[in-house]
Structure formats: C-alpha cells, structure tokens
Image (tube, rainbow, N blue to C red; front, side):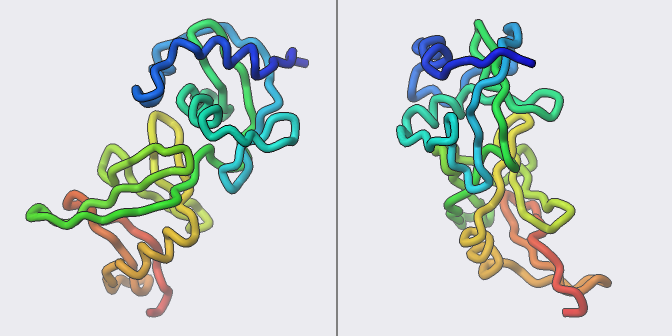
Length: 186
C-alpha cells in the first residue's frame, strides 16, 4: 500500500509556478513516485480532497497545471515528487464553445472548467468515445469531456452529411471536419 501525501506538502512544492504561464512542463520532469493522495476529480469536473470539495478555484487551477497521465493513472507532478490521484472519467470538462468565422472559415475555441482554452484543430481533435460521448484533447494525454449544453450548442451549428449509416452531424474548424454523431436512417 502506498503512503498518503497531504496536499499542503504538494502545494508548497508548487510555489515556484507563475500563475500566468499556463501548464507546467510536467512531461520533462521525472521525480520519484511518493504515493497516493486522497484527491479525486469527479465526473462533473469537481475536485475533492478527502471527500470534501476543493472550493478554492486557484488551488484547483494550480493542481490542474501539474496534472499528468502515465500508464492509465493520473498524477500531480512537481520537479521533486509525483503523487497519484483518482479521476472518475477525464480530468476536464468543456464548459464553453465559441466560434469565430473569418476569411479562412470557422474556428472553434473550447474553454474547460479549469480555464484552459483549446482551439479545435488537428493538434486538439474532437473525438467520440465508444458510447458516442464527445471529448477533445487538451494537452499531452489529458482530455476534456464536452459538457451536454455545449454539445447541444454544437449540434445546432452542425452540418448534416448523408452517409450509408445515416445523417452525420459535423462541425468544421480550421478547414477540418469533426464528427459529432450519426442519426441512423436519418
């Protein structure tokens, strides 16, 4: 059984991070594994410590900036330590989608519950799970589930394309089409 780590200890290791810099370069850090910490990210994107919600948005954003996924587990990583946390689905939820149309066509920008902004592109593709739940790649091996209200907004803006399976609903961003789903026989 792994030892338990307290968030105060982890938080003190993160004092060096610049708040305006965005995610830390966790992919370059290789600290030792220090055990499990009782932090859980719920399906709706809420963060909990020992079963209680983490109410400080700044602390959640700080922890999200040092989040990494290795071997199908999620970790908070600093240059000095690596602790495992629990994630019910994916660590982020898309809470807003904005579309900008210019001479090059539409571009979709998604905002997550922790303030990350992601431009829908080949670097940050939208994809469907086996259950047809839409996700977008945020960074490295970290994804965000597209919240239901945002998904409905995208469906309203979608283009219908007839296929052998039915009517495919797609959106276009940076010249590339992304599938939102197929209405069978439609």
